Image (cartoon, helix red, strand yellow):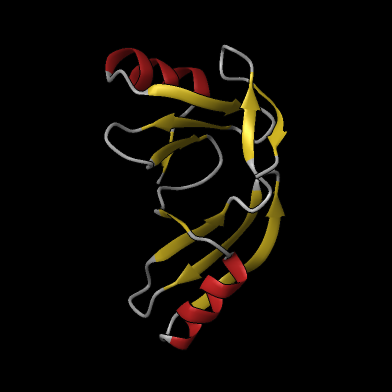
Amino acid sequence: MQVPVPTLDDGLRFYTESLRHRLKWRNDAIGQAGLELPDGDSELVLTTGNRYEPNWLVNDVPSAIATFVAAGGTVISDSTDIPVGRVAVVQDPFGNMLILVDLSKGLYTTKSDGTVTGVHPS
Protein backbone atom coordinates (compact mmCIF):
# COMPACT_ATOMS: atom_id res chain seq x y z
CA MET A 1 0.00 0.00 0.00
CA GLN A 2 1.27 3.46 -0.87
CA VAL A 3 0.52 6.27 1.55
CA PRO A 4 1.26 9.84 0.46
CA VAL A 5 3.23 12.00 2.88
CA PRO A 6 4.44 15.62 2.52
CA THR A 7 8.09 14.61 3.07
CA LEU A 8 9.77 11.30 3.87
CA ASP A 9 11.12 12.72 7.12
CA ASP A 10 7.62 13.78 8.25
CA GLY A 11 6.13 10.44 7.24
CA LEU A 12 8.90 8.45 8.88
CA ARG A 13 8.64 10.47 12.06
CA PHE A 14 4.97 9.52 12.39
CA TYR A 15 5.06 5.92 11.15
CA THR A 16 8.35 4.81 12.73
CA GLU A 17 8.62 6.93 15.86
CA SER A 18 4.95 7.21 16.82
CA LEU A 19 3.52 3.97 15.40
CA ARG A 20 6.74 1.92 15.73
CA HIS A 21 6.85 0.46 12.21
CA ARG A 22 10.38 -0.65 11.30
CA LEU A 23 12.09 1.06 8.36
CA LYS A 24 13.08 -1.54 5.75
CA TRP A 25 14.39 0.79 3.05
CA ARG A 26 14.48 4.43 2.02
CA ASN A 27 15.07 5.78 -1.48
CA ASP A 28 15.18 9.58 -1.54
CA ALA A 29 15.78 9.59 -5.30
CA ILE A 30 12.23 8.32 -5.90
CA GLY A 31 10.68 9.80 -2.74
CA GLN A 32 9.72 6.51 -1.14
CA ALA A 33 10.39 4.52 2.00
CA GLY A 34 9.27 0.97 2.83
CA LEU A 35 8.09 0.05 6.32
CA GLU A 36 7.60 -3.41 7.77
CA LEU A 37 4.10 -4.15 9.00
CA PRO A 38 3.68 -6.52 11.94
CA ASP A 39 2.63 -10.16 11.53
CA GLY A 40 3.28 -10.75 7.87
CA ASP A 41 5.10 -9.92 4.69
CA SER A 42 3.09 -6.78 3.96
CA GLU A 43 4.91 -3.53 3.40
CA LEU A 44 3.70 0.03 3.79
CA VAL A 45 5.33 2.38 1.26
CA LEU A 46 5.45 6.06 2.13
CA THR A 47 5.57 8.19 -1.00
CA THR A 48 6.00 11.87 -1.74
CA GLY A 49 4.97 11.62 -5.38
CA ASN A 50 2.08 9.17 -5.68
CA ARG A 51 -1.47 9.04 -4.40
CA TYR A 52 -3.01 6.54 -2.02
CA GLU A 53 -3.23 3.22 -3.88
CA PRO A 54 -3.04 -0.43 -2.91
CA ASN A 55 -0.03 -2.38 -4.14
CA TRP A 56 -0.34 -6.07 -4.90
CA LEU A 57 2.83 -8.13 -4.72
CA VAL A 58 2.67 -10.67 -7.55
CA ASN A 59 5.07 -13.31 -8.82
CA ASP A 60 5.22 -11.89 -12.34
CA VAL A 61 3.73 -8.54 -13.44
CA PRO A 62 3.11 -9.45 -17.12
CA SER A 63 1.27 -12.65 -16.09
CA ALA A 64 -0.73 -10.77 -13.47
CA ILE A 65 -1.72 -8.17 -16.08
CA ALA A 66 -2.95 -10.92 -18.41
CA THR A 67 -5.03 -12.46 -15.62
CA PHE A 68 -6.42 -9.09 -14.59
CA VAL A 69 -7.39 -8.11 -18.15
CA ALA A 70 -8.97 -11.53 -18.82
CA ALA A 71 -11.12 -10.97 -15.73
CA GLY A 72 -12.38 -7.61 -17.07
CA GLY A 73 -9.83 -5.11 -15.79
CA THR A 74 -7.89 -2.61 -17.89
CA VAL A 75 -4.25 -1.57 -18.05
CA ILE A 76 -3.55 2.05 -17.13
CA SER A 77 0.24 1.86 -17.28
CA ASP A 78 1.90 -1.19 -18.81
CA SER A 79 4.68 -3.17 -17.17
CA THR A 80 7.87 -1.20 -16.64
CA ASP A 81 11.18 -1.84 -14.91
CA ILE A 82 11.90 -0.63 -11.39
CA PRO A 83 15.11 -1.28 -9.43
CA VAL A 84 13.71 -4.38 -7.69
CA GLY A 85 11.56 -5.81 -10.51
CA ARG A 86 8.57 -4.67 -12.53
CA VAL A 87 5.49 -2.53 -11.89
CA ALA A 88 2.21 -1.80 -13.69
CA VAL A 89 -0.98 0.10 -12.94
CA VAL A 90 -4.33 -1.55 -13.61
CA GLN A 91 -7.93 -0.57 -13.01
CA ASP A 92 -10.79 -2.82 -11.99
CA PRO A 93 -14.25 -2.51 -13.62
CA PHE A 94 -15.32 -0.25 -10.75
CA GLY A 95 -12.67 2.43 -11.34
CA ASN A 96 -10.25 1.35 -8.58
CA MET A 97 -6.58 1.65 -9.48
CA LEU A 98 -4.18 -1.06 -8.27
CA ILE A 99 -0.40 -1.22 -8.48
CA LEU A 100 1.03 -4.62 -9.44
CA VAL A 101 4.62 -5.15 -8.28
CA ASP A 102 7.00 -8.07 -8.61
CA LEU A 103 10.39 -8.41 -6.97
CA SER A 104 11.92 -10.34 -9.86
CA LYS A 105 15.24 -8.47 -9.64
CA GLY A 106 15.64 -8.82 -5.88
CA LEU A 107 15.29 -6.77 -2.73
CA TYR A 108 16.80 -3.44 -1.80
CA THR A 109 20.05 -3.56 0.15
CA THR A 110 20.39 -0.82 2.73
CA LYS A 111 22.71 0.88 5.17
CA SER A 112 21.83 0.66 8.87
CA ASP A 113 19.72 3.83 8.55
CA GLY A 114 17.60 2.27 5.78
CA THR A 115 19.15 4.24 2.91
CA VAL A 116 19.12 2.15 -0.24
CA THR A 117 22.57 1.11 -1.44
CA GLY A 118 21.54 -1.26 -4.23
CA VAL A 119 19.57 -4.37 -5.02
CA HIS A 120 20.38 -7.89 -3.84
CA PRO A 121 19.44 -10.29 -6.66
CA SER A 122 16.80 -12.87 -5.84
